[in-house]
Image 1 (cartoon, rainbow over the protein chains, first blue to last red):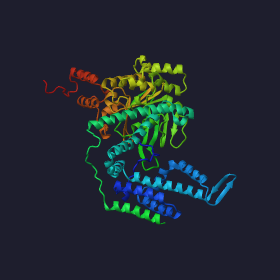
Image 2 (image 1 turned 180 degrees about the horizontal axis):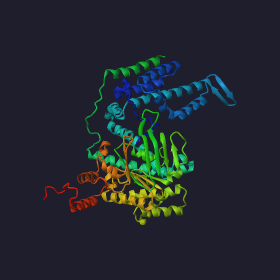
Image 3 (image 1 turned 60 degrees about the vertical axis):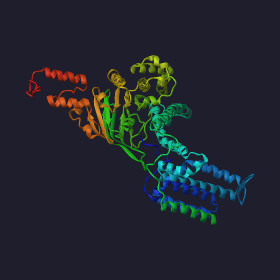
Image 4 (image 1 turned 45 degrees about the vertical axis):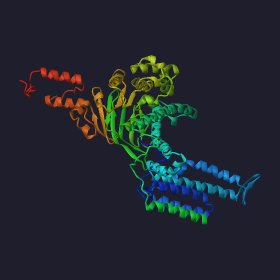
Length: 265
Length: 298
């Protein structure tokens, strides 16, 4: 079965670019620095620099730009909402428009625009991480990043196991939901051809089978993991060993330089 | 013709990086009231093909004509609800689509969706259960508490309760025990022969369907590699190997016997019993063509 094409979450797109080959830990660190940089960008010039940098890196992955845009699309209403709230709540700077108690200020518009632009960058650029890294490697990277916390009693294995199982089963359960939807459509419950009230009723016919099969799967997974001797927090050898190279250090350095430049601006 | 496909192709996720062609240029005709087997290796497009039969998938190329409804690629399709009632599609592991707390409610789901009254729906549910060889006492039971075989049959009955003219099943016998498998195929054959429904079955176990099916469709990588009767298939079963399938035992044995005794012109015996009888009768006959069936024994 082929997965829903609208869903881009957690899907890697293989093009074999230099970004794809980087160590997942480097990419994760880069992303954390990037998020900090976004929060530090407070001027148009800083945003422009950020845009040039981000677009250059995105282009160099050789993944078509439209996939990055698609990744941000589901959040467009949230962005609109944030823009409107910022625009209406900030009452500073020159007044652009006013009617009675209602007024629009320059600063409000500026901050609204800033928030939206930052959010777009945040989502599109971090999508790069999942686009260029397979879930398995991403998890390994995450485990690497989290390993210092082991001393604090936190179990990186547990966290990454949870994340990797969740990621692993999103497509499976979606596929299954799709089959069940088709099966119920074959029994006359086609969501596309029904009114809203009937749709709500049909939801039960979809949710019960999907949830019961998710539980069945979870049970099977537990048994099969136990059958193979899986133990939490046991020392395991790795099939793919992550290797830190010069490119990885350069990748992080690149972000640090960008960060410094943006703070100076 | 119950179903007619003309140059049908189907592409998943068209216009994206994950585009995948599942069917190429399929021409297919299924006569009314016949029992058809569909075989093919995994990924050959069997399940995709089935979903075209009731408009769950719309062809991306060519046209699909089912009963009196035509779905053409690129055209707005007609209302599909009436078609869905007349073409019962049973997906793999249909028991996983059950959701009501009693078997009866689950069986009534389809008929009610198609606008029947509760009385009629219950009547249909009752009949469908009998048709699937189940005890009507099960109607009040919780479907999740039935045995695997019963649950499968009940789930098929939930599609049958819609009283479809065409019944399409995707591997209905998968994961069932041998006894339930044989039983299910016999029940399905009865639906075809006694009630005149067209029955289309996708199967990985050709052996169990070979004695019953009127014709076979074999798919290979989204193309039709063969369509014809079991007799034609028995004449050259090795086409199946080219399609990545193993030749079923019944065809293999029949081929060996037919080659040995020159029986190519008669209907193949595709069950162990009928083949044994045929061989016994051959051995009892005096030699006619001088091929010497028993050389070495005299």
